[in-house]
Amino acid sequence: MTDRPLIHLITEAGCVVKFRSEVPEDWDFVYKNLSYRGVMEADNSLYYQQTYFQSKSWADMSMVCYKKDGTPCSIISLHLHDINGLKGLSAAGLPIEPLQFAANVSKTEKQRICRAVVRGLKQYHAYKNFPEFKCYAYCNGTSGTIDEWYKACIEVANSVSVGHRIFIDLEQDVYAIKASFRKSYKSLINKSKTLWTTRVLGQNEITKDEWKKFKYLHFEASNRVQTRSDESWQNQYLQILQGSAFLITLHSRDNLLVGGGFFQYTQDEGMYSVAAYDRSLFDKPLGHLVQWIAINEFKRLGIKKYWIGDRPYLSDTPSPSQKEINIGYFKEGFSETVSPRFCFTFKT
Image: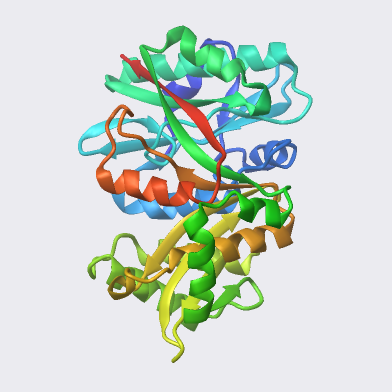
């Protein structure tokens, strides 16, 4: 499913765009020429999102943007969603992530494209009578400066709020990484090693039986509720076989599966995606060891950065639940590096 008015409105705002579904070769060209290749823009992630949201009748509206000379130069992941009757564009149900530019795109081109896309998105929501949409923006690395996407958003947004996310710089020495862990985590990792055995299951180690056991553990941990389709689980299994993900499992002394985590990665970025643990063992350390093993595996693969997840705070807007705060606090114990993420809201 595609929506021609979206293409028309962004083009009228000053940038030629095409849907990824119509020009997959152009999407691949840009992705391969990004200076930093994120997990969420990778083909297998986009296909997973498509299978995950298929039952919800959501539509992939991801687009490729072009320079004035017709060269594809930027990509953006978009989905037309319906959340409890509220329709709009998002990135898999979350705020839209910034445009990703190939290397050697001029500042002038970036400014033109960012402004056209943001203004076109706002006009599209008004045209469709959708109430609002949201976009994320970030500061540039250690310099803390803002980029053209941030500027394009703040020019026409109605409001902005700030959130935070946690990452680990994997280009550090592994001992320096561990030194930044919360003090209690180091002893919990050591204790975990005496309780559980671990396995790293990549494309050469994973089996259908191991994946089936992890899927069933997730089902049990979710109060025996199937939270997503079998096809989406199959897609993640294929990601492991394709060499873009791995599964870490924890086993008891009698070889029972008690926990595990599924992690995705590209050449540059690692991401924590899915975890499941035996709920009867929550009084024992489980997730700490899985994270430590994952960090070491990402290091072995030569990946630059590991995004662990969000760090919600009570002062955030909207206010997070206590469970979300607790999960964020747990993740923060693995890294002292917490970076701001700005969320722009556009009302129509």
